[in-house]
Structure formats: C-alpha cells, structure tokens
Length: 319
Image (cartoon, rainbow, N blue to C red):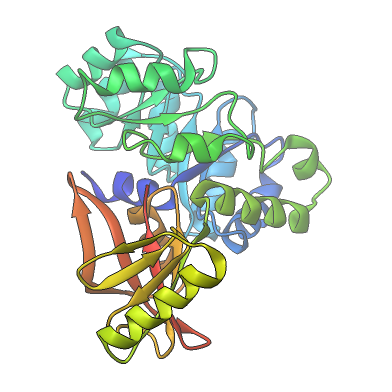
C-alpha cells in the first residue's frame, strides 16, 4: 500500500469539503488540524475547488489534500498539478482511473456493488470508495462484499455521521470513513472555525469509540491476588474466572497474580480499531509497548500504551 493510502487509513476519517471561496481553504485546514483530522477531500462541486486545493497544498503541507467528485480526466490532471495527493470519484470513471494509475496517484473510484469492486480488483486497486454508503445496502452490503473480495478495503461515504460512524469504523474491511457532517457549508460560510474544530474532535472520538473495558489490580503474589478476588466475590457477588496470570471478577475487574505494568495496575480501554487508535496516539506523541501486543487473524487485538495515568498503565483493546 502506498504511503498516502496508508496515512488515510491511520487517520480513519476523511472530511468531504465544499468550498465556495478559496480564501477559506487555509483557515479551514487549520481547524481540521486542530481538531485532529489532517486530511481533506475538496470536492469539484464549486468553481473554487482547484484554487482551494492549491491554497491548502501550499499553505498547509501537513494536511493531506485530495480532490473529490472528480468525473473528468482534465479535472484529475489539474488537481494533481495543484497539489492533490489523492483523487476520489463518485462512480467508476475510466479516464480518471487510467490517468491516476499512469501518474501513480491513489484513486478511489466509487462503487456500490460487486461489479465495481471486481473492476477495481482486476486493476490491482486496494481501496475503493463505497458510495452512496447507506443507500447502497449499508453495513450489510459491506459484509457481503468482504467475503469474496477480502483483499479490498472501502471508504464509505453517504449517510454517515457521528451517530453511526463507529459502527462503520469497527468493520475490518473499512479503511476510513468519509463525510461532511464535521465541515458543514454553513459553518464554513460563517467562518466558524472554532465550531468546526470542536465538531472534528467529536468526530474523531466517535470514530474511535473509546470506552471503559476493565480495571486491573496488581497483587504482590498469587496468594494475595486470590484473596482480593475472593473478597470481591463475597462482597459483591462477582463471578470469578481463574486464568494463567490473573483472576477475572466479572468482566470489569482483573486481579493480577503478580505485579504487572503500572504502579497500581492498569485500565483497559476498548476502541473500534486498535491499529487506528495506535496511530492516533503516536500522532499525539504516545507510543506503545510492542512486547505486549496481541494479534489475532492479522489484526491487532490489544496492546499497552507507553503511558501511565495516576499510577495505572493503559491497556488498549480492539473489537
């Protein structure tokens, strides 16, 4: 996978941006950056699209700028020359796909069913736009396509917002999610950059779906751990499950049989996609402890962050 496509997957969410005035491009880009989404798909639905792509590419090179709603090869060529790093089509457009492949620029043609996916697979494309996502069968269609086309990943767009982005993000075949709810045209027109930044932050959290998983309690030895677990069970009626290195008291408390990571223990945090969450924390300057990672069926299922909060290590857990 090329570097641009890989980075889109790490970010996990692609704002679909409609700009009527290129003067708003850089201020909008700054709001996206501050909100934790350093990527923008600028659509060719206005006359300001091309200059907006150029302005963003020149002014904020840290923002990954793409061109969207591209339906002609001349649009794709102009966008690439203006600095677009990727190209998105609402449907399959042969001349756009051919041009992008020739120039080595990632292209995401829109598909809505198996015929389009088969065309992409035949050309060696690894990522396709799934559009319109909800109207084309939604998550059920994604599940149906994932079987015969296991090597293809999708960027669904259309009908997705903060209320359902998490459900899409949990699917292993979803590379990233596209949408415009965090960059509404009326907010751009009002230059409400603080509001857009806030909505972007909320979108990022909705994408990752962080939630409490369990509390881990360190014990000095196995006997002490067993005593703690027994007390929890007797006092609160929690069911115990004995494991190799710990005792589970219900699903919410893990009593370690010996000291482990964290001065006091650890906090398990669930998320929709562990690989994507690790990339987010890396962008925030927080690494992981590679020796703790668990991989199942090629996906990262769990890993500890290189971080302690109030004496507790943070255990990141995927679906």
